[in-house]
Length: 193
Image (cartoon, rainbow, N blue to C red; front, side):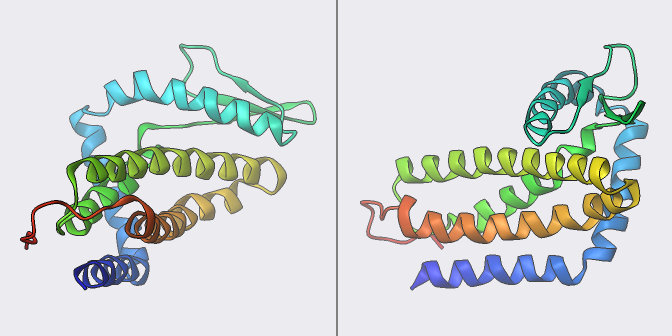
């Protein structure tokens, strides 16, 4: 069955990502620095980061973490109050999970190669996008809670490695769910290859 072959390719690719994780995080840092120098990130930093900061602050407060949004002109996105001290938490454009969106896009390119109906492919793509955004918000919340309850070193490890792990788990679940419940066979009997 073509779906099983595609699923195996996606799983193999994600496994390769985990094996090469140290190289990937280093390459991510280089790529991020390149984008920072070009200045392309400013639109994302000025529009999406404040919105996601609000989401993160709202959710971490549900976990009992006293978090407060920063003033608009400050570099930190929000503050955590621990004891009587405020700790800045800087949420930048590259913390939003662009890497997981890139991996989602690549996996969609590979995973949607079968004969699927157009409406089920659109549903699959929307499910993937919404799920990836929610997973990234969860990841940012988890890291922020880690900063508050443990320390910044622990949060740094989570930031670099937990994000990739969560993305891999999410994409495996996404493709299993999509093949099982979302994607439907199209009316065209010829399968695209």
